[in-house]
Image (cartoon, rainbow, N blue to C red; front, side):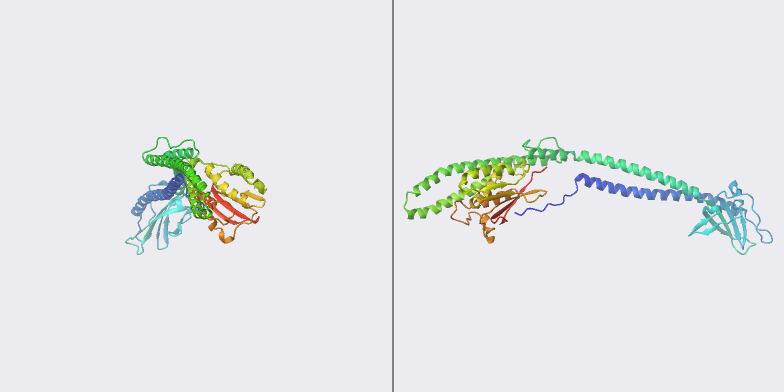
Length: 445
């Protein structure tokens, strides 16, 4: 099975919850920061206009003309600010190029319009109300105007807005902190479950323990049941494999011994069947060994140490060939494979190299990866044809019948790697012989 490419992990549950909360808080804060000042401004402007309407009514009540159609100077209005120059409160009466103004306007006029805004003395920004009335002695309508300086209103609104933003930001930060506490407390059982799984993976315990909420407890119970069932199945499979090996070893040895006493014709007829039987037994025993260890989750093995141990054994078996194995693996390197399974993988590959190498075997790691480890075992032997790489890992295939073996070694290696979600690939080595590249998982941190 090909190795799956590493996938970009999704954000954690905590991050997703906090991001969602932060987005909603930001939206609410921005909405409040813009809507509330707008409502306050509308309220303050309405209050000012309400007061101006009172002054406008007072001005309307006092406006009058003489018999000649001239405006009669008005009496003093109720607010003394109309008498104080540039006080910020003004009135004017306009008709037929004639104008009466409050003393507060002094020698200036109210200028501007609704679109660009009204300006008073000293370039004051004004809030203005107008009213047109008709008098019997005058044909043209009389325009009454009252205005007030709105700079104080705008300054008050700016101060309120600044204070409101400060309050909103502090409130949003406090709410986000409380949400963080709530999320952390709510996700604590999942962190506890993660820690329990790590303890199981490291072999510190064989089951998940602890008190969990009602929503997580069924998952914990199912995982414990699965771990127990998996361990029982592995132990049972290994026991059956051992029992089968011992049960069949003696009968097959007897049959092989008896066949040697027969004539050559009978031997040639029976030996292929016995060899085929031996191959089937070796194959299925190898498959049983591939079931993994009882503590597969906590499996950690150093390939460098296992290569050294296998090399020492092979040096004795193939002492007459003078083959040298160069182990370039880092001694601190670990793979998430049980020791016996790693010995099966490396042992088959290294023994194959010892059989065919002319004098040099090289074991090294050509590149670093995040989740998997790539080990390469190559030799300077004759190698195999390029079109035979795929068939070489098939069960029972032997490319050279003159060399002892069952043709199961590479197949067992391939299926062992597959059981650990790894992969075996064969290619031509730069040394001239076979290059076996095996991808194995690294232990989880």
